[in-house]
Image (cartoon, rainbow, N blue to C red; front, side, top):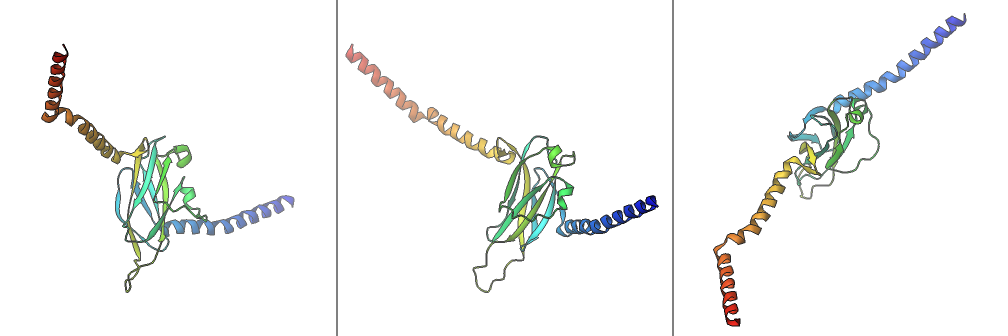
Length: 209
């Protein structure tokens, strides 16, 4: 009799857990499907992305990450569209099913160090949730407010805090500085001035002697 009672209690417990757990799980999975899911490869910019201006959301799966490397996820968009972007880094697929209730910082980029043990399930990937909302009103009369926001998104590896794509700009600036410092030594006018100074010095030496 006690065994039958234990079986009934175990059955009721499993039934209650299943009944109250499945709807939340289904709701989370449905939320992911409704928001959208796209792949973002490292160093490959996705251009012409669109989201609804009123609380539009999309998940991006970042592929091609290197262990213990620093990365920057950055968004660029037209300044003519008043919008605020919120980026939230997710560790794994399980976190994608958790709706973020806290207010995220308004940021158009995030910087993180990739650790496969902390940021994913052992694979070279991570997840970022992009949320956008309207940040102002249209100043021009008789002009309708945009319903969509156009933006580009990219994930770049950082070296000494600088994206790889920006290194050529720094090298070009350094080269320009070196050339600016070296060019005067090769100008004929500069050489002529030095010769004149040397001749003046020789004349002064002869007079003193």
